[in-house]
Amino acid sequence: MANELRPLIEILRDLRALSQQKASGFFFVVTEDNHSCTIRLHGGQVEDVVFSRHRGDEAVQLLARVPGGRARFQADPGRSGPVSVTLGAASQSWLAGGFEQEAPAPPLAPEPAAETGTSAHAGVECLTGRQRGIIERIALDHFGPIADLLCEEALGRPGSIDRALVELASNLPARDQEDSFLAEARRALGLYR
View 1: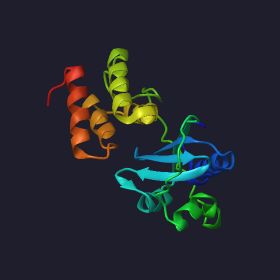
View 2 (view 1 turned 30 degrees about the vertical axis):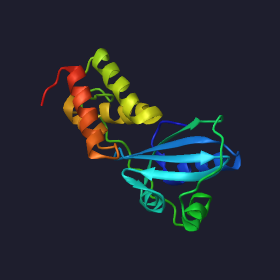
View 3 (view 1 turned 180 degrees about the horizontal axis):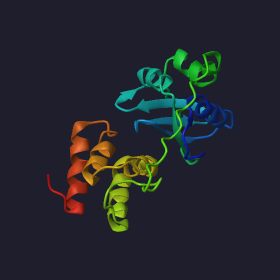
View 4 (view 1 turned 30 degrees about the horizontal axis):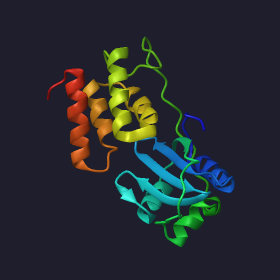
């Protein structure tokens, strides 16, 4: 799966292809505005969808409104046990291909051109390789495999290190988890707020 921004319909087609292949694992989506969605597959069947702080049918409804994003699949072939689906029939049907009957998603806006004299890859101000490694390691502990995509997005935007940390923390499902992530990252980086 690619890391470039793509329309939601293409991402959902990838999900459908994984379902048809009877794949088991986690399908991660990071939206254009840096919200995360995790779709759990078992034997090709969607078991659960979590979008930002919402789960199940509500998460699917929110996902349906997203114009596009980035996606990645992480296989979990060793998982066994019965399938426990938390989605209603309408959500399962939409994810299985019902999205094709809706109007096509609007095309993604082109990336703004870099200002003269700045790099197209300008990101967080004054971020060293060591600091990036610290942030990525802590993010991996808190977010799991989707941390790479979230860090790439948050650290790739201009602004301060603290702004990037707050943006990353906003993807955690509970306020106490956000606070824990921010405290650990700020402590490790020597930032105190």
